[in-house]
Image 1 (tube, helix red, strand yellow):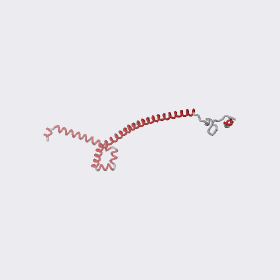
Image 2 (tube, one colour; image 1 turned 45 degrees about the vertical axis):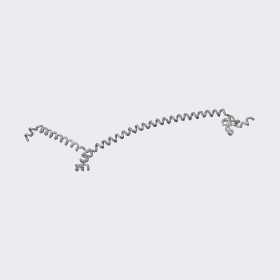
Image 3 (cartoon, helix red, strand yellow; image 1 turned 90 degrees about the horizontal axis):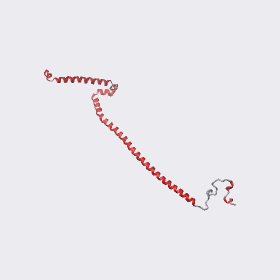
Image 4 (cartoon, helix red, strand yellow; image 1 turned 180 degrees about the vertical axis):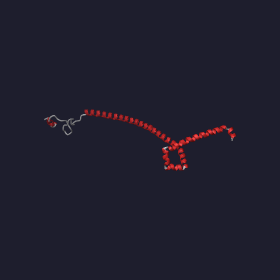
Length: 174
């Protein structure tokens, strides 16, 4: 064996360096485990029934740990998909809503413009009809029609200045 150490001295040096690194790694691991076990949340969990069960059944604890680690990636993908779909749907709804509101506004503008033209035409027709009828009635004389001041029953519509004017017109000519 002495001959092997003389022939391969670098293996002996490497193995002693590896042993030293392993001891350092083991110390770091123990330090980290002490930190984890001293955490109040870990202590509370380990004192619970589930923590005691998992402590007494390491295979179940390992299976649960592997399942949680393996399911983290699909759950993360699903959450990214759900959030991105929601954001895209909101943006899409905003775009569609903007388009629909713009289309509705343009339609309302067209309808109101059409109603404005129709109301202008109707008011023009009514104004022209009014002017034509009043002009025709002004020049059209109707015989035996009551005057503007008298109603059809012969009573004066305008107030009179004297009580003698309440007599019929036939009595005034006498």
